[in-house]
Image 1: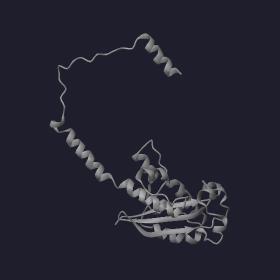
Image 2 (image 1 turned 135 degrees about the vertical axis):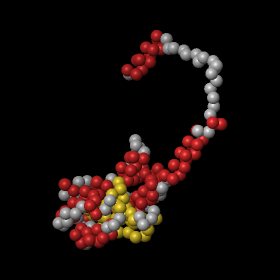
Image 3 (image 1 turned 90 degrees about the horizontal axis):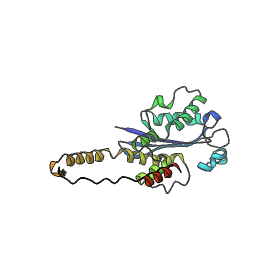
Image 4 (image 1 turned 90 degrees about the vertical axis):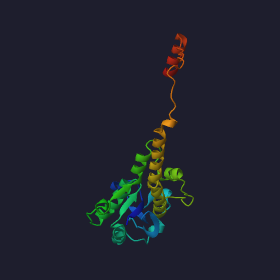
Length: 221
């Protein structure tokens, strides 16, 4: 039985090394490639102001006043993810923050020492190099509805990423089937068009001096 946990966080900033903290953790369970109703969701009091990050997630200092601190939710979070593979978009970001929170409360263990990690950002780069790989772009690529996503939110983003992950990893069998069909068609002698040996010679027209000069000047400008 394959158990995946799709996880996301919201934070007060970009770098834990600058004192920024986790303010929301959201996670969704996928069991045997089915998104379940089993979820983990908790807002966290960061013991600092959220600052300009409120413009991204909309979580205010006032809202967080009576929320539990990370040490009060850590056991529940670890119990929830234990025994699963974590699916995270841009995993180093979330893992950096979660591991920092564990370190602050005296836990030396890291999240990646508890669970294997699948980074959907890296997976997307492997699948389609040279394209956009943020969550919004992936949703557009796979036709996933994001109308409820007016702001970033850990649980909502985890729910959306769960759909994205299944779409990213669900097409291999049909893809290989198409390749097999194409190869069988290409190897079918009846489909090969022979080129006549005695076909007319192709006439090659070379550029004159003025045309060559114009071409050279075009690429220099």
